Amino acid sequence: MSTTYGTFPGARPRRLRTTPAMRRMVAEYRLHPSDLILPAFVREGVSEPVPISAMPGVVQHSRDTLRKAAVEAVEAGVSGIMLFGVPEEAKKDALGTAGTDPDGILQVAIRDVKAEVGDELVVMSDLCLDEFTDHGHCGVLDSAGRVDNDATLERYAEMAQVQADAGVHVVGPSGMMDGQVGVIRDALDQTGHEDVSVLAYTAKYASAFYGPFREAVGSSLQGDRKTYQQDAANLRESMRELALDLDEGADMVMVKPALPYLDVLAKVAEAVDVPVAAYQISGEYAMVEAAAANGWIDRERAILETLTGIKRAGANMILTYWATEVARQLG
Image 1 (cartoon, one colour):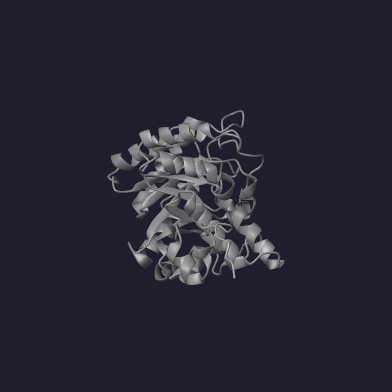
Image 2: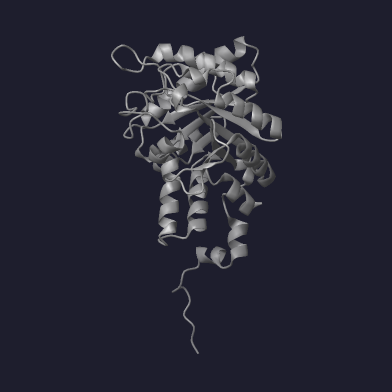
């Protein structure tokens, strides 16, 4: 019997894929519960959670159910919670004053979560006016109906102070105003809140994938945010925004959305020595849930695949509406 050698490959990468145990052992990237941050909405004036139709499984919390969600996140090993306040419609106005009211829903929610879980969960807050304005924009409008950058910065400074007074660990300025990180950092430092961190929404794109979020926060927006959020075609612009945010004192930086901008995320992660976050936003969540509901994809596999891809691209932290669910699976 003759044997011919050298006709088959000597290098066989498939050897490292033969069993689940082998694949786990050689995995280059691993998700961990501590990678995850749970975005959560709390609605003023409700006693029961209100389902968000475009985001199956996600709700606008009551104060009580928000406390419960925070406890569940801690028990699952999630690292943080990002809070969004949804005020009563009658409390919205042109300046978003409910956002700087010490007794506004977001500040109340911060105090509630801090009272419930203390420092076991990193309590983060959305620092933006869009939930609180009757026009739905992220800032103050001028006489021509355009967002006034510098007038908005004054409002952001007030928001930073009241959120810090409420006990937040991290503020997340998401409005994409020029100079917002520096103004917020100064406001925090000048009011004795030097220990409050700033998570800069460094690269926040004007995306179609925010659609379900509009329902989640009861947005009053007419038009779009293309004059202040970034254009999907631009990458170098993100690096300029990154340099500015770091120079202004950002402690952490974020890319949002995640999946359509993994190239941006990878470039940002390569360039910095601060923690990098990515936000898997409402539209990303809704697409997976809708496809899974129709039997088109394997839901759990798709969720883990998307999150692993975000981590592989360079995210140290991932904001995802599946945070608690996935943390339980990983734990």
